[in-house]
Length: 202
Image (tube, rainbow, N blue to C red):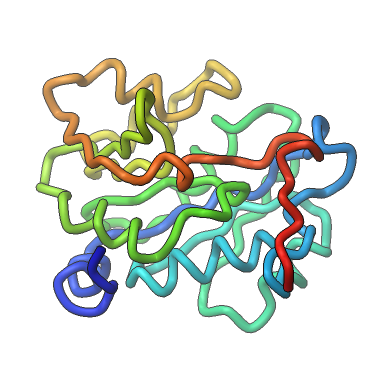
């Protein structure tokens, strides 16, 4: 897999990143995004992958928990605070899209609890993007996150009402616009419960 340095990174500058990090971690039992992943909080790891892939700007949607902002301190990104994360992921998506610069052509929307996802994989998605499309990763037998949406879908993303289904509602509604990119199945793994946590060596 190529490094994000030339084409992928250059094209990434046309695509914003929206990192969804306002979840309550109710199934994990504590704020999972602060758990250490190879020496840094999982949230910071996710944000760095977005930045290293060349996405710009990167907007991190967080809750009012000040520890989340602290975990991202010093990174060149914008924070958007969701004061009601209990409303579900759709509220965070709408907030992230609303925070985008007015004329931005596309946005990659991803979750912060997918720590195996690399900057190289994100760059591969970016390289597949064509204006007017939706780029979706396929991990083995299923689709997953993150997803790139052309700006023509932004209004639909901001109108989402089915909590926790997220952008997949928009993907399903526009099959003709979808481009699939095969990624290693392990990169689609997210961390929901303590049993999912591998506790890798630092």
